Structure formats: C-alpha cells, structure tokens
Length: 637
Image (tube, rainbow, N blue to C red):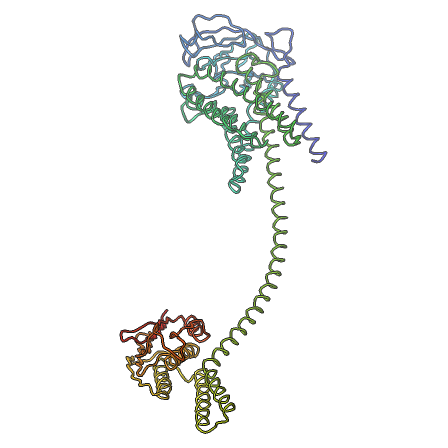
C-alpha cells in the first residue's frame, strides 16, 4: 500500500471523527433563543397521545424530557402521538435556519408554525423505517416568526420501540454539516458496504463452486450473505413485505451469520466441530421458532436474549481459537483472533445500545458492529484469495513438475517399446525357425530317416539288390514332399476346394503305396471360399501326420476320406478300420499301444498347428473298432 493511499485513509478517519464531534457541539447561553452563531438543543417538550394527521388544537398536553422513550403504557392507548416545542428566533435576511433530529423510531413528520416542513414517509403499514435515519429540514425564511415559534412533531412507532431524540435548531450551514455527517455514518456508509460485502461473498462462493472440496469457502460466503441482510436493515426505508416478516428475517440473519462464521473459523483453524454442529443447528432453529412467535414487542425482547447468546458464542470461539493459536503459532490465526476481538467489542456495544445501556444521543450512539465486520470480512477474503492463489501457484509448479516427469516417462517408455519391439522381432524369428523346423520334420524328415535306415542295412549286410529300389522310392517320395511343401508355401492352394482336392490326392498317393484302400466322400459348396497360405499349410501338415500314423500304427486295410466346405466351415476326417486307439499288438515280444507316445514331436505339432489357425482336432475310436481323426475349421470365428 502506497504512502499516498495511507494518507487518504487517515484523512477520511479524521473527517469522520470531526463530524461526529460537530454533531454534538451544542452551545448558547440561552437554550431557547437562536442566534447567528449557536445551535440550540431543545430537550423539553409537551406530549399528547393523540393519533391522526391533524395537529391537535386542544388535548392533554403534558411535559416530557427529550430523549423521550415511550413507556409500554402508552401503547395501550395508541402508538401514535404529537410533540410540541417552542423556540424563540430572530431570523435575519440571508441566514437560513435548520431543524435537526439525530434519531427517532419509527417515523415522524415536522411542522413549523402549522406548516409541514419534513416527512419520513408512509405512516400506514408498512410504516416507513426511519429508525436509523437522521431527520433535517431547512426552513424557508417566510415560515419563521420574529419571536416565539412552535414546532410540532407527529410520531409513530411499534410497541416497545418508540423514542425521539432532542431537537436541534440553529444556522443551516452548521446543522446541515452535522446532518450530512450523521447520514453518512448511519446510512450512507451502510449503502456502500452492502455491495462490497455482497460481492465479496459472491466471489468467495464462486471460488467454492470451483473447489467444492474446500467447504471453508462456502461457510465464509454464507456468513457474508447473512451479514449483507443485516446491513440492508440499516438503510432500507420502505418495505415491500410486512414489517413482522422483515424483522424476523433481519434479526435471524444475525444468528445465522454467527453460526456460519463460527463454522468458518473452526474450519480455518483446522478444528473439528463434532457435536458442536448439532448444537449450533439447534440454536438457529430455536431462534427461528421463537422469533416467529408473537408480535413485534415479543420479538424485541427475544432478540435481546438471543443476541446476547450469540455474543457468548463469539467469546467461546475466541477462547478456543486462542488455545489453538498457542499450539500452532499461526500468523493468519492470530490476525483472525484480533478481528474477532474487534467484532466482539463492537457487538457488546451494539447490544448495550439496543438494550438502552448506551444512550441514543451520545457520541457512541451508533451501530459500530457493521462498520468493523466488513473490514474483517475484507481481510479474511484477502487471506482466502491469497490462499487460493498460493494453491494455484503450487498447482502450477506441480503441473510443471508433472510435465517433466511425463516427458521423462515418455522417453523411458520409448526406450522400453524399442526393446520390446526388438524382443518381438527376435521372438518372431525364433517362431519362424520353429515353424520351418516343424515343416521339415513333417515333410521330409521321415523320408530321409527311412533312407538312412536302408543305407545302414546295406552297409552292414553289403546288400544292394532290392534295397536300392526301396532307397530310390524313399528319396523320390522325399523330393515329392519337398515339392508339396513349396507348393503350399508359395500359394498354389487358394480356396477350400483346391485344398480338399489336394489333400485327397496326397492322401490317396500315400495310402496306395502301402496297399491301403481309400474311399472319399465330398460335400462341397458351389462357391469355394478363400483360404490363406498359412491356414492351408497347417491343415495339410495335420492331415499328412494323421495319414502317416495310419500307415505306421493302424494296421488298416481301408480308409475313408470325408470333407465338407459348406458355409465357410471346413470339416475333414480320416477314418480307418484298423486296431483303434487302445488296442495292443505284439512285435518281437514287446507290447505297444497305438499313439503310445502322445508326447512325440509329431503329435505336438498337430496340436500346435490347430491352435495357430484356431481349428478343432478330435482323435477318437469309431464304431468299427478303428480310429477317427476329425479336423474342424470355421473361417467365421
């Protein structure tokens, strides 16, 4: 804050103080005579308890002292009456004279020598609310008499509320300044503070709306909202709702703001409410019910007790926060405690002003609470916004740190992805090697093994006659297998029909070589469907392995080859009339089961190929005692 701004603030405070002092600067040796330099204070008057808009000409006038507070007995007759005052004046040309009332409750009209010179507004319900307004009239020179002048005041109030302060008469140039100062202090300042408080609460509410987990902002916004209602009560003049309803709202708003501010302070200090929350809710609920019961007079009496209880709650809050500050030594908490002490002190003053312990004409005859509370709210709002800004800065730094961590993680992830790709490539190479090894085994491994066995026999027995033909046959068949392998791998088999015919031809050639009869049963669709090289190659190898098993182990004389390719579903089966899966045969005294070694590389290869193309393979006994190998491949799955 600049020195120039501090200087302006100090000057404003000095002007307000001087204005307050001038308001009560009454002088004059003759209290009933107006001179050109003095302000006369009229502290005695006559009163008549007569209702109506016309000045009573006769009646039971009796003397009263100003300030006059209405006793309860008056309201049994009427809540409206008239005051009559006399003042001696010597008007001078060019020097205007004014009449000024510091306070009255609830409404009044001023008359000079029978002429209306000022009115506070409506006398019918709802009555114009002038309880916090000063009243001033600058009287035209033509209405003043040189000598004794009569001032009449028509006054109306609610039961238990009515009073009227002394009347000041003097030079207009002086009284107008006092009136302006009092109007600023009592009314205009409240009008200025109301939007400030309301906007502050709305701003904090919007912060809470963006950060709903931070309930501290919501409670502060609620406190400022309820306080705004109380501030409106300081300057609202003409109501659009019944007076009883407005008084209920205005006074209950004080209890509501005390509770909301209590919860805010607890959350601010990091304390837990526990059962206190239920007690506060019960307190507000009780106040709402009691305030709604009875008339305005009963409300006025109830307000004194509940406002006193609110002061006690504030005092307990200060003690609790002080203990918390001693434990935590938080600078923000200390400032909050100081603000609460200011609110507590001004609250005690206003409660004493309300109950009559502080007079309505003294230098402190103001509601001080609403001056201080917005200042405390402004500081707390500044603190909360600073906290929000700090959180935003922390979040921004966290985001920067997070971005750096993300960049580092992305770089590390890129390295890992490259490593995984390398590993996948290596795994693909190994998988391809395994596949080629399996193809070699299935295609030509068996043939060359037989050739080696024949060669060994020839070497041991030095026989080459008939075995040369056998060796030639084995090698020829191996070459044929290699050609079939190349055919399947380069893609000569393009559809389901080609595959079935290829398998039938290959199986027939293999079985004929060992004198096994082959019969075929085809159920082919009119339109063949495409099949990939990989799928064709795997199916060929599965059927080839099944054919070899029949030749080696089944002891069969006949085989049925059945195939179907309907609705993109391929089914191929080989069914023999051999010994079956579980039968035993003797060979040189040794017993062997068909497929006795199910863990051989060939059987594993058949199963692995089925998994690769998502086909189903079933090996089971058939009804004739032989074996059935059935492969199902659904292209739609």
